[in-house]
Length: 139
Image (cartoon, rainbow, N blue to C red; front, top):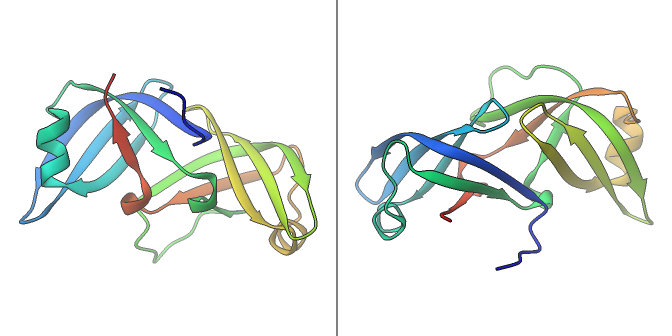
């Protein structure tokens, strides 16, 4: 299956914490680092997610926010430090590619944000992704 989702990270389930309707799944990324996904308990069962299972974490580029430094006092679980490798801009939106060490990541953000943050190749950033915006797929 081919997907339009740019951000695809292979990894292994590190832990599954079930709740009443949702579960939190911690994923160790093959490239290093960790992502947390909040998915339904039903999905956990359907995908057969258990500790050690191979998964692919998927994140739409429109669900990635960028910061130019560490951010405290924020509920966002996924914070991947990295370096901007490329910036492309259009009329209103732009695409920022980031090397996180865990893999390449693309963020779709406004041109205004790119300008205000001074994003260019070599800029250190932190990619922020809510755990509810991380989907999981199995091979």
